[in-house]
Structures are given as structure tokens and as C-alpha cells.
Image (tube, rainbow, N blue to C red):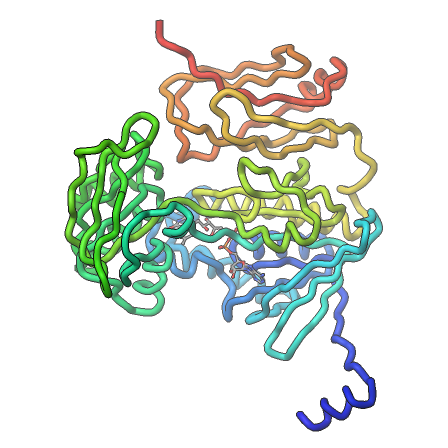
Length: 448
Ligand SMILES: Cc1cc2nc3c(=O)[nH]c(=O)nc-3n(C[C@H](O)[C@H](O)[C@H](O)COP(=O)(O)OP(=O)(O)OC[C@H]3O[C@@H](n4cnc5c(N)ncnc54)[C@H](O)[C@@H]3O)c2cc1C
């Protein structure tokens, strides 16, 4: 076989890369990819899912704790149970599955045109393949921030893991990462891992959080820390890693209101394991290479109300678009993306001539607003997150300096992804004012 190939090259004959045609190609087989694929299939499209792992399910396969499905199935499921419901549905269809297959690139033609067919190149166990589709759905999820991204000083011993990697070791590989752990960051993965480590007999010395508030959901603080007696130290961070071959201790320090370590507050905590739960980054390298514009605030694609990116026919959903705390919300959003991608591919709806062109910007304590563009005068679901917790604030919608809507005063937390239905009549009012931008502002109500 090897000889035949070298002969082929000698004769100047290049074996063509095998190509298969679909209407919609979905990249990523996590909850986002599966929901998008099922919705596109239901709309009549020929669909393919490409997943680099051996199995569908994405990150949910390692999330063996309960808490999934409460809104989607009205039932409490574990991550693998939640994923399995969608895996079964995918298997009951003729959606083509390319597992163990890594997407290397998306070619949308140069420049990207409205009529372009996208070519998705992947490396599969059978070699290189190309899948073409009128629409592509990006559903690649996100990855965890690592020690180098937050620049913790000190030596570089073994024993420093991202919390998700430790979750995989314990829940999938049956490996114990250490015996005495410190957790940096109170995001949901860190909180869940505090409980998981305790249940596995690993002593958890504490969860240390830079901010003056916990970053995870309230229910996770209660169920994972309070119920297991794990202390939460706010306004505190790890300022040094100590150890040569294996981690021996970490130095923690309190921080001031500018988040700078306060000299003299250093404490040494003996431990052999440091778990980092310090944020997730949407996996957008493929998207950027395909010409998709990213929003620097959420590090996901700038999309319109149908979750279509600026490259016609490329849609995005799930954690690759913005970080979700609940898989149920991922499913709901991704069903919209899949249905819109099918409509685009089949020419039955989305992607038609835009009604309008408005940008959406966050203001006040809103960290981002999604979608970043509105191209249709229709009821539009806006998602946003606040940058800090407040007891009393209100959502306001403004255009051309005029307030078009003011919501009720209520508390907001950064751990909760908010959703707000923007009525078509408000979009129309903005257009009537001649505005090119809608502002979603979350304004704290200062106490007298
Ligand atoms: C470590 C970790 C732990 C989490 N724990 C929880 C939790 O306990 N509870 C909770 O509600 N949420 C949790 N989340 C959030 C969770 O990610 C989301 O709720 C949900 O799983 C996101 O779905 P998704 O499909 O967008 O992403 P994912 O589930 O991450 O799926 C993305 C898929 O895309 C595939 N992929 C990526 N790039 C390529 C490529 N180039 N080619 C082919 N395939 C590719 C990946 O292999 C993966 O299977 C966790 C997230 C992380 C990162």
C-alpha cells in the first residue's frame, strides 16, 4: 500500500480527498451539536455531526453529578443521563456521524459569499475527508483557563490541574489526582470538584476566590461547600506555588479592592494538589480562521437573532458562543441555531434579505449582550450577564438616547445567564428613531 502511494506521487497523480455533501454540517457532538443537528434534521435537512472524541456527549460525559434536565425534561438527571437522551435521539435518525474526527478548517470561499457552499476539512480514522454544506453550525464548546493564563508565580511541580481535567481523571479514567487539595476559583466546576474530591477521600483545604463573592450558582455553593464543610475564602488568591517534583504547598494572600495581593497577609497551605477553576474560553480558533468576527467581551462569535455569524451560512451555539452555566439552556439555544441553519440551507427562511441592521451593545454593569446584531423586526431573545452582583438594578433598553423599555428592579448575579425578550415593537421604535444601535443597560439602583 505504501509502495502504491509513493508510485502515485512519482507519477504526479495526487489522490483526491474524499468529499461528501450535506445541507448542514455540525462541528462538535456535545449537547449543543446534538440539539442543533436534531433540530436541523427535523426541519428536513441532510445533517452530519463531526466530533473529535470517540463518543458523542461532549463535556457532559464527565459531569456525573445530578442537576441537569430540570428545565428541559422537568426531571433531575446526571450529565451522562442528560447526554444519553440526545445520543439515543441522534442514533434514531440518519444523521451521519464522524467520530474520532477532528475538524481542521472551514473553507467558505474567498470572499465569503451568500451563495457559498462551505467545505469542512477533517481528519478521520479513514484519513482526510471533506464535507460540504450550505450551512455549518459551530458547536465546539470551550476549554479551561490554565495556570499560565493567570500567571501564578512559583515553581512548576506536578500536581497543578485544571478542575475539569481532575474531573475527567476521577470520573472517567478512575485516577486520583492527589490526597490534599486546594481549589482556586469558585466557578461551578471548582465547587462541584470540591464535593467530588471530598467524596473520593481527598481532603479539600478550602476554595479560594479572588472576587468578594462566589462565582458559581448559589445552589452549588450550598450543595457542594456548605453541606460538606468546605470553607470558602473570598477576596483571596494563590500567590505562589511551592514544591520541586510534586506540589508541597501554596501561598495564599488576601487581595484589596483593586484585586492586588495585600503584603503581610500571606499564608502557606500544605497540599499536594491545586485545582484551578478560573474561567472558560470558547474554542474559536476554527471560527476565526473561517473569517468569523468575535465579540471581545464574550470571546464568542458576533451573531444575529438567528445565531448566524457574520459569515453567511455559519451559525454558532452553546459554549463556543458564550459560556453557559446550565446545559438545558445550551440545548434550547442550539435547537434555534439548528433550525435556522436548516432554513438557510434549504432556502426556507433565515438568511433572506435583512429587514434592518442594528447592533446591540451592553452598558452599565452588563458584561455582554447577545445577539450583537439584529436584522429582523421580530421578538428577539437577548442574553446577557452582569459583571458584579447587585441587590437592586433594572434592565433598560435605549436607542438614540431615548429609553424604550425599563424593567422591574431586582437583584442580579454574574453566575446567572439572564435572558430578556426584546419585543418587535421596541426594535421598530428604535428604527423609527433612526438609530443604528440598541443599548442594553443594567443600571444599579443606588441606595439613598
Ligand atoms: C470541564 C467542564 C466541566 C463542566 N461541568 C459542568 C457541570 O458540572 N454542569 C453544567 O451544567 N455545566 C458544566 N459545564 C458547562 C458545560 O460545558 C455546558 O453546560 C455544555 O456541556 C456545553 O455544551 P457544548 O456542546 O457547547 O460544549 P461541549 O460539551 O464542550 O461539547 C463540545 C464538543 O465539541 C468537540 N470539538 C471541539 N472542537 C472540535 C473540532 N475541531 N473537531 C471536532 N470536534 C470538536 C469536543 O470534543 C466536544 O465534544 C462544564 C464545562 C467544562 C469545560
